[in-house]
Length: 99
Ligand code: SF4
Ligand code: SF4
Image (cartoon, rainbow, N blue to C red; front, side, top):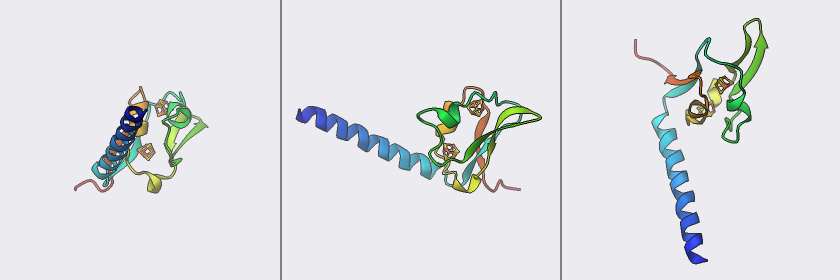
């Protein structure tokens, strides 16, 4: 029983450390929706690993269903949505790209 507890604790600890590392890596980055790539599949807004901060919103307009970055200020650049999207419609970009 203790072994299961140790393994569970180790997994949770590694997951937390990974989250902190990913956030640190993306401190100066923000998510960007690549025009024309989104199929409107909804994975990034309905999947179990969807954005926890509700940064993204699926809209339906003259260009069809696609994702928009509605609240970029809330984006932690964790990268979860980028890894979920199979269509390369989401990227992490520099907040203030060098000129
Ligand atoms: S951004 Fe990617 S995952 Fe999200 S709805 Fe568009 S295609 Fe699907
Ligand atoms: S990078 Fe993280 S915080 Fe930013 S929109 Fe994607 S899932 Fe949300």
